[in-house]
Amino acid sequence: QVHLVESGGGSVQAGGSLRLSCAASGYTASRNAMGWFRQPPGKGREGVASIGTRSGNTVYADSVKGRFTLSQDNAKNMVYLQMNSLKPEDTAVYYCAAGSTVISLRQDRYNYWGQGTQVTVSS
Image (cartoon, rainbow, N blue to C red; front, side):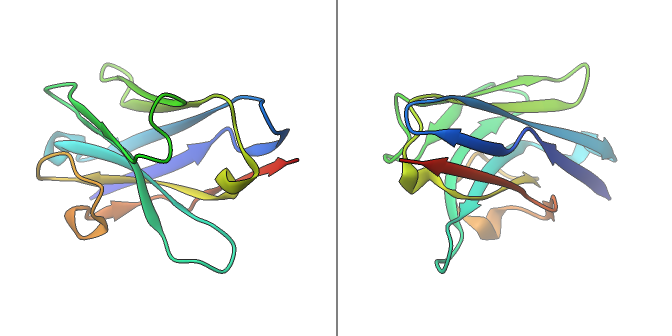
């Protein structure tokens, strides 16, 4: 079992920045990939970014490339999502997820999910 807790969400004006954190605990050795997903109001959940816990390789959704940066601190079992140049369309509940396969923006590649943190970007 892997337990994930997100933090760092909040409200910001367009153009601002936020950093989301995801703390992993439990059997973290099984996680090969960590991902961030988001669910905008009234829409389905979508992949945002993913990082390989051993390789450090990353993949980003086109909508966030150049604005969001994923990083990790394996010693602390932490994953971070730095979000810059935020736009109103980035408003969503953001979820951290852990998976045992390769990095991916597909939800079905992930076994464990956090409870989510709200990000609201006003224009």
